[in-house]
Length: 157
Image 1 (cartoon, one colour):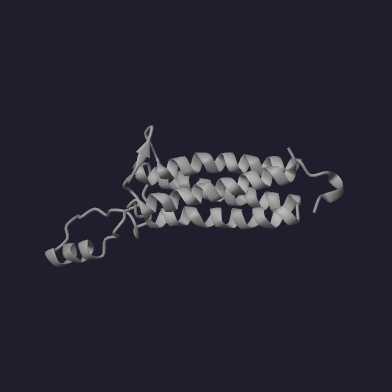
Image 2 (spheres, rainbow, N blue to C red):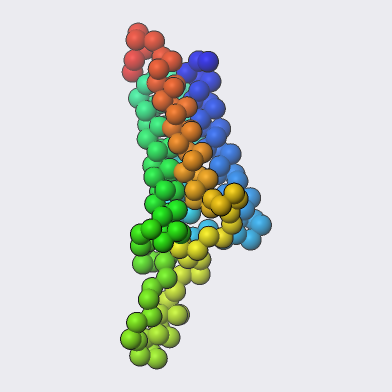
């Protein structure tokens, strides 16, 4: 396969994952803040893929790989938050109630996020959407890296 084929396939993979996220959202699965964070690198990868179609080069392929690895990393972090392996951002995770006064408890309830990052909204084969995003994005990073190797030394820019 050529570099253009690998970059096109990788960019299309990001488009497919992003489309899937919007489909789930249209079906009533509202995204949490960390879900939204995982979308931004896919948008970047799609743009890089479009540019690389017209201006192939190792730098763009490496940037595409970096975008895919970024969303994969966020997905792994989000998976850890969902599984309780580590704490997530306080802006989208549940907080312990502790010894709060009734007013403090009410304030905490009223300021709680609508969609929490530490709850799994949907899963398949025991993996959440964040986990699937991480796995597929690692595959996309591999495609981007294969694109790096498909460019001859004379066009190394």
